[in-house]
Image (cartoon, rainbow, N blue to C red; front, side, top):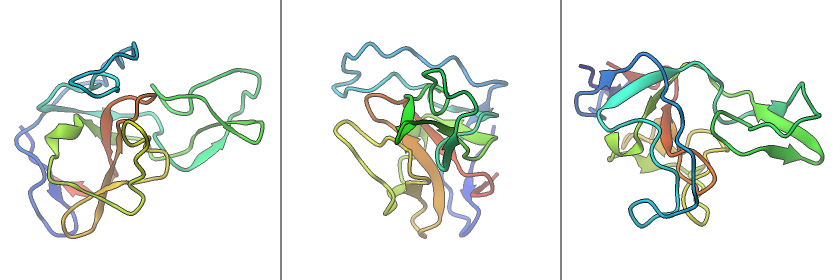
Length: 156
């Protein structure tokens, strides 16, 4: 079992969590509301975390394959910047959690929220009460529903 704390101030951020060996397959979105909200089912079950080896979130960089409609990050939408297909150049090996496993995080100034939730495409949007950036929540209707912790932002 693992309990995560803020690496800046030491505040406890989670209850006991168990690690699973790999990121589960991201659930397909059918556009129907989940618990009254239009978003995908959560990637991670409550009480568990995994290390996500794929890049996630900002910054976004031009894709090497400009001839295909590819997701900008795993489970995410395609992203186009003035005719250039973009992919995530963000951090790898983020800790991936169910967003509700860290309920006391605050929204940071980059905590953009659209019609259904946070797209998570502008960098860390959730922080500790001390103000330290902790992670990036994705909860928009066209993104996965997950929380990626910034490498080094938390300690066990």
